[in-house]
Length: 364
Image: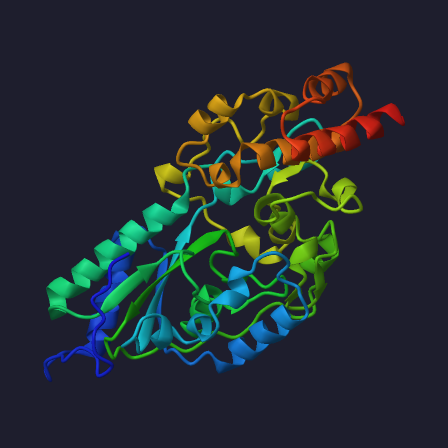
């Protein structure tokens, strides 16, 4: 991330600068760099801050202490990056071509990995493209203050994207677009350029509650309300310790994240296949067998997940998640043998979840 943000008065542009025309150019440059949409937001986030504070007060963030730690820097962009007056928000589609979610979720012997994590980790790619966009703006207007982000700092990216007109917040709390559903990444450029802002778009969820009804663990406790402590994405990615036993059977074969609320959303009929090669499926993760993945050594895990978002949870949590998936799989000799092979694993975390999985199969 780069920052040259300096003074709160912002960049001194020439009086002849056509700011509306500059925004048109920024959108065009963004599309050239692989972003499907670009919008401009102001930095007023008071309402979102109140909602976040209430969410944290209820403990819905679980062990994600970083959600509370940063205080007002999350809801005050100018506190995180002094001098910020506008946020350039960008959307990049990630849906891979070959991933058939329904068939994988319907086969208890396979491992479901959230569609966003099937290819390379998006953080570096999105940040790099945003950096290139900022450089392109700089060539047009001269030096200005900016800093780029891609899910890499205390940034309220969904709320900023909503304010910038890229979509509306769905009842599952994710951003939705009429043109692209929700299978996309978001990135931001905090800047001191006094750009004209975009208007938020109207909401189009209506009375639909499919995302709420589809959540396997009932983590969406109401429209626009998520209890992360029950969310499978939290349980398989953010949670460092033991997964609560009552929730393990509900996880099914979802070993890294969960897309159920997105898969049932009518707006994802319009989700577009990504043209980015980096988002293509790697290591056959769009339909790999649980037993096959559970047999990987730590060296294999590190090598095959190099450059993948999955690697950040580490080998032990990867095995923990797979053990839960195997515990929910149909009972076969292959499944039981795979679990038996790790019953004495060096990790207490892995041993606990393997023992739970074996107990389920032996009870049948």
